Image (cartoon, rainbow over all chains, first blue to last red; front, top):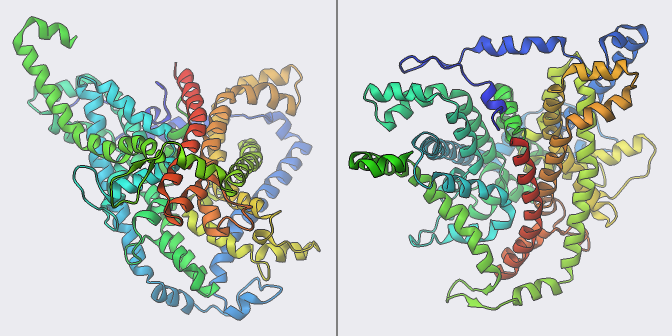
Length: 326
Length: 301
């Protein structure tokens, strides 16, 4: 656990006074440089021979073609399918290019399916979940890592134990709990709270954050403490600024998680004007003409793909942080 | 250390007390969230499966009645068999293929950014979008898949409408949308293999396959095991594919445990029966989760 991927890319901390500069970016690039000489199964020598080179290019081009066919072509079919008329969609054999580029279907899908409402709902759920996750999990991880209260280890253990429970198996009791909150008696069904608060109870995020906070040297916090900063101030002006990488990872995982979630919102947001986009589209999918549905699917995937384009690096970092614990 | 100072001077005790108070102040929001949305539902899962409740009056204890109802349901064996078959098939494709893809990607020196981006793209799509997209591809008439089969002069399949192909169709979607995760994780693991191991193996005259068998696999053994357990736990919870594609049909050919659990609660209004199913699923999955935790802890030490 001591050589986690996230920690490795962590900032070099200098014992200076807060606020600290963000981790230097060039560091990462320099670290990557030796990878150029990296060799895999095939030796550079074999690759250098004519036969090796021919095989390499055959493999490369078939992989590129195969990947494009398997992973990109379905998306192409979706985007262009939305441009076709219902007649053209039903035609056999299908047309590879749409007869005409008619973007009206997208506008139609937007209006008919009230995608604006669904998208707005989704943004509200994702943004709220992000804020609550950060506020709640960062403070908790900070307390467990740096304030080290009595029973802190037990609390962390209980939080991590929730990772062992697959979400599907506590779906029903969780639903019943949200429907009638014990002691308080609130009914959170059809309110954003039903998404926001459960999203914040994430043992994995607390684990990631705590592990990162553990790597921040004590002297740094002690220096701030001698300067008269309280725990809240230390968190805000020392810990947070140096923790940007991990906070970025957690933010993206939190937002993408809410954006992709289906079962939970299906249960707790049954009103059609409260649904996020995934649930909304699937609940209306049966009544829609095929091309309108495709347009709706395209619109629903754009935000996720844009997020991926922009935050690729952090998303992949989060991926490896999630599985390679070693 | 704290107890030592507390015993010696009262000022230290007060400071320790205040520090704990601050700490729990920082922790309280998380504790409340976990209590309501994780810990309590875990306990309640047990209560639920032994109770009968109509949510008006107080819940009634019924012992094992819920389990009996569920087990006697004709869909019960189908659900477990389908879940097992789904998990098995999904592993067959979804476990081996990403590893092979990662092995190949790891050797390529061109277009790597594009290939990584593309293989992870479906993972980023909301699963509901991917599933609805495939529902359209599976369309028996002008659906893409039958058109492709037609191009290859193969007979059309009825994909989701036949008991023999429905489950496999679900596995296909599921694999398509989840393949990228495994691939990128394996790729990261492959890149951490020291290259001198390959060099040494090569000097010893090991061919390509022997290098994979004697270097790559032992070096990535741990991540392979971890991924196996993670995938079993993830695929056994399959819900969205049967929910959106087949509704469990045709003839219960795609009912899964999670889907049956959902049906019990929200179609039959029998939360006790759903709870009983959930508890059974939990017990099975806990075995895999426990092994997973054990493995990853061993790794940490």
